Image 1 (cartoon, rainbow, N blue to C red):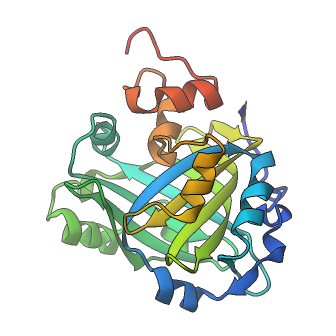
Image 2: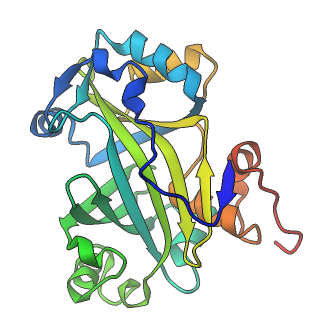
Image 3: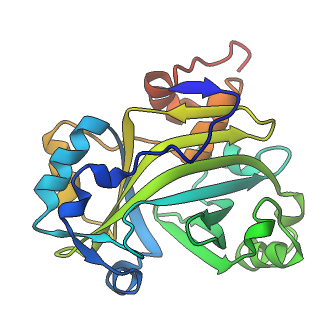
Length: 268
């Protein structure tokens, strides 16, 4: 992990360097038709970069890679919104069964942007609602954005108090596993920026996320065979805690200590 005042995002190394080029391509429409997975179960892993080639090789008979305009690695930016009292963060930290996360996600290569509301239901599943959003307003919630949030969580509950508190950037590649219609996302060059401009980068590791409707995928089983187990990590919550050790963060302590060099504040 490195912490610095600022970093260019132009010098990233795409995940396709890890043998993704050997996979057959799939277009976005076909990927969505096969595995849209707006309601899904996610499993997340942090693995060394050196393990990625091994995993892709083992998946090559079952996996295809998302390709758009000849590219297989895409730059993402997410801006997370929370209330002044960090209602969304604290609900996650305290394990509230029904909680929400609000963000804009910008696909930097195309300039497209979406406003997303992610809900955790009582059974531990994530339900994502999204709508197109102007990229030039991705760091604010305008009246239309507030109305969309209200339509999901109820009028006036949080939308008027939401403000941008954290920005993440990373490179992502996406695999479709054909036999199970599940996905694997591969995130590299992870970077967090706080509201006051501080920056943290996570290097030499890859964040993998398997997304399925329930049962573990072949990717999960391969990772388990290498002693990689699912971890508890949220780009939003982990980033917030890394910047502010006074925040309650018991759920993410292991990841924060092992990968961010983090120690909790004595005041917390």
